Length: 241
Image 1 (tube, rainbow, N blue to C red):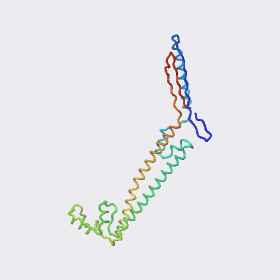
Image 2: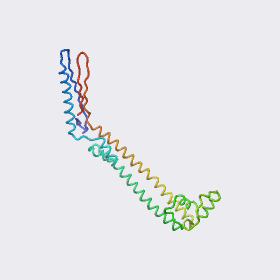
Image 3: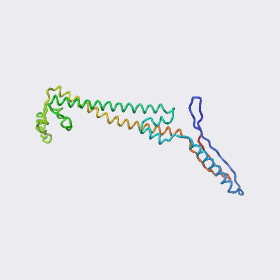
Image 4: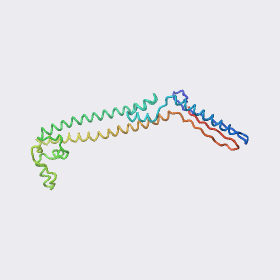
């Protein structure tokens, strides 16, 4: 049971019932069994009535927020909506950022491919990263191979043929390519961070929804039989409302 306060908040209450009886040597076991039976019957009725009420499931609240951050909070009621909207808003912001950066990166790559082909006479689309870096560091293929020869790095040689040859028209054109390349690399490094943030948001939202759902559940009934000494005993029935 929840008691409503003046400020609108609800307080969870619980009730403990003690049944104490004294027994002497003439008391039959029937009275003991009767006390236990009454307590168990009361426990069953209380649990059955609670099962008829729609209670939030902490596990389901966690699962919902793991799928869509904030969903678990929103399903718990109006008092949890603010926290739910925080996680949901964060998720929307992260997805917008991801698609914005991804779209921007794709556009930059197309511009870079066109720029390189027009200004250096070669195509880097589909080429390995070593080749793409080489044309950013050297003005033409001859300068690149001369550098590798001086350093006796024979394995790094690039065959001088039509498919591999490049020669920048100006240093500015080469610098523009390097700028585009660096911007693309920076964007690609941000994407995994955004994915990690989405995962973290789901975990935090799920844990928060789980705890809030668990805190809204009534206290489970507990039954205990306590020997009191002097031929007496107590049946303790603890019930949450």
